[in-house]
Each structure stands twice: as C-alpha cells, then as structure tokens.
Length: 383
Image 1 (spheres, helix red, strand yellow):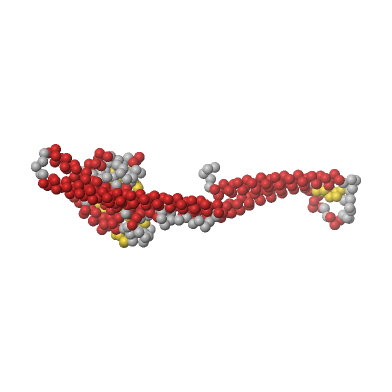
Image 2 (image 1 turned 180 degrees about the horizontal axis):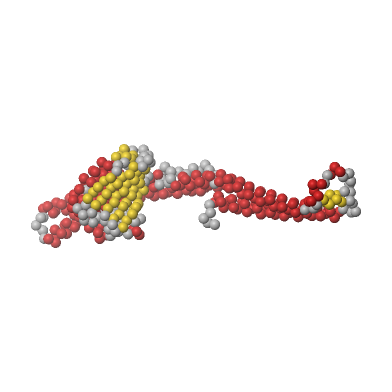
C-alpha cells in the first residue's frame, strides 16, 4: 500500500466509499421495493387478478381489458428483474465514480506536483534565488512557507561556512608565505648543514608548500559563488593546454595523454580549466608507470559529457561515492607520496554543481577508472 501513489489512494478510497454507499442504497431499495410489492399483493381482498407470465407477455394487450378498480396485474419475475437492474446500476455508478474520482484527484494534486518539481530544481548554487511559490492551496501554504524558511537557513549556513573558510584561508596565506620564504632563505644561507638537518628542512618546505596549496584551494572554493559563468568555452584547445602544463609530470612517470572529441559550452573558463586539470592530474598521479590517460569530450544537444579514463589500479566500490568529499583519500600513504590535501576531486564536484552539472565514477576496476562529468551547454549569466 505504501508504494501506491496518493492519487490512486484517493481514488481507491473514493471507490470504496461510493461502492459501500451504493450497495447499502441498493439493499435498502430492494428491500423497500419488494416489501411494497408484497404489501400490494397481500392487500388484494377478493379482487380480480390477472397473472401474466413471461411466455404470455407478447399476447397481453391492455386495450382488450376493460378498466376495473379491482383488477390487479401482477407480472411474474418483476422482483428479480428489479434486483438485477439495481445491481447493474450500482456497478455502473461505482465505476463511473471511480473514474471521475481519479481525474478530479489528479486535478486536486496538481499543486503538489508543481511543488515537487520546484523542489527538484533546488541546488546548492541557487539556494538564495530559489523560492517556492506560497500562493497555492491553504493546505500547502504553511508547508511552502516552512520550506522557504528552511532554504533561507541553509543558504545562511552555507554562506557563513564559505565566509569562515575564506577568511581562515586568507589569514593563513601570509604566515605560510613568510614561513616558506624564511625556509628558502635559511636553506640558501646554510647549505653546509648536517644531512639530518637538510632532510628536516626539506620536509618543512614540502609540508609548508602543501599547506599553501591547501589554503589556495580552500580560498578558491569559498569564492566559487562569485565567479561569472558567461564565457564561451571550447574544450579541445583547453585540453591540449592542460596536457602541455602536465608534460613534466607525465614525462617523469611515462604516462601517455590522448584526447578525443570537442565541445562548446558557456561557463567559467577558469573553473572549467581547473575541473579538467584536476581530473587529468589525478588520473596521471594515481596511474601505473607507463600507463595512459584519455580525455573524451562528447557534445550533445543540450549537454556536454567529459570522460577521463586512466589505467590505474581502480577505486574500490565502497569508496566511489566518497572520493568527492573534502580531504578524503582512498590510500592515505600513497596520497602523501604525491602531495595534495584531498581537495582536488572535491573542487571538481563543486565546480560541476555550480555549473548545474554532475560528476561520478562511471566505471572502475583493476584495469583502470573512468570519471564522467556532465555539464549543460548553457549557463545563467548570474555570478
């Protein structure tokens, strides 16, 4: 019963109610009709009567019988036909009522369907602009008002979170830059230190650089909402540029990069570049030495699909939904080896959602992984 839609529930309940009512009325009518028929028959006291059977119905002519107040005509089988006709009428009324209830309930539930379609359009990127229409049925008005208040609270919470992240990242940039500069200066002025001290300084420089990159990424993520998304982007040249930027890393690991297809979309050039760069860099870093990475772009009428495939060891199924969460790593020791803060794929997810798209692991096995991104070709001109 829980899987039945509300419209069908209303229809079935209406049919049941009308059916029970019609049956009750039918029984009462039958009892009343039969009772009065029997009463009329019993009240005849010595009067003449003519009993006409069904076989004689065709030969009966009321014009041939003279009017007589004491004449009563009793037609055999009238009670049975009366009951049968009543049951047929009951079934027809119940069926027609059910059909009418289905269409009427559909019209009644139309505001609820409209409400559901509006709710489906709510995204993290449009919480401030998305408001549910409250000028609907009184039964849904309070619900719509509460939902709008919830959206406002969520938007305020996310705005406060972005502001805190941006402020924290901004404040961390200066001390990290100062630490980095001091470490570089100290290493340059003390090149004859002990091997243990040199290794310690190298570790400090590496971790400081990692913190700097993390701070930069957090600052970018906090400012995503303010970036305009009205630039015309052609992806094939962008992919070639990314391949050129990643050439030192691919040459070091012996990874082959190939591209296929092209597409045009409207969005933020800088953010789409970062999305493709992060996906491609991730595919190169976690690939097998001597492996390959393929970037395939498919243009469709209203959307654009990007697939980045590698020949790495794959992602376990239980982690395929978690890799887009901030700071998540499948293999922490291996991630530390290649640097990064676990924010690359999280930034990819944020950029895709900001453009009204989505990203997911399309397939993954011990032969490699394919991550797919789907983006609409047209964007809102609002930042």
